[in-house]
Length: 212
Image (cartoon, rainbow, N blue to C red; front, side, top):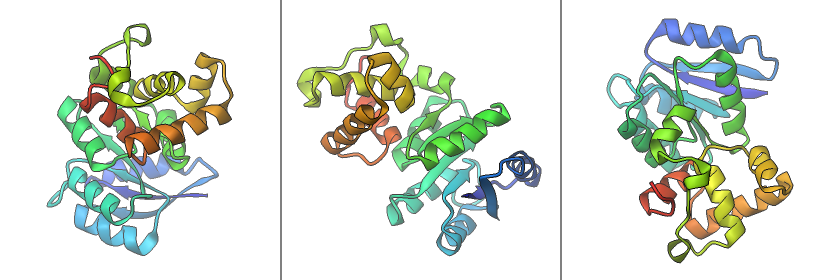
C-alpha cells in the first residue's frame, strides 16, 4: 500500500485527488496539508511514501518545502503537481529534489502512473516540460564524453533519463534488460553524485552533458 500526503491549499483539488486515488487498491491518502509548514509537520508524523506537493502555498512555498524535506530525509519521494508550465518552476523544483513534476491538467491515469513511478524511485516529468527542458529529440541528443566520465552505454542511458523514459523503455530502445538498465542508472548516480533520476537530469542539463 502506497501512503500519500496531499499538500495543496485548495480543498476542491484535494478532494478531487482523493476521489481519483480512492479507486486504486494499492494507494491510500493518509494526510492532508494546506501549507508548507503543515506539510513538514505531517511528513515527520506520518512518514508518507509519496508526498504530492503544490508549488503555490501560503507561507513557505512548495519548492522551499520540498528542499527542507529532502534535506532532512533524502529518501522522501515528492511529486510536484502544479499548474505552472514555466521552465523556471520546473528547474527550481528539480533543484530542490523533487522526484516528479506533473501538471494539474494531466489525465487521472497519469497521476496514478506518476505516483507509482516516484514510489519505485523513478522520475516522472510531464512530457511537454521535458521537451522544454532539453529542447531536442533523441536522434539529435549528444552527451559530451569529455565532461561526463561515463561509458558509452551509460551515456546512452543518461540520454534516456533526460528524455523521461522509464527503465523498461530505455531497455527496449537499447535492446538490453531492465536489470542492466538499473545497474547503469546506479553507476550514473554514483559518478554524477546524485540520488535520483530527476537530479541526474538537472545535473546533465546544468553541466551541459546534453546538447540543448
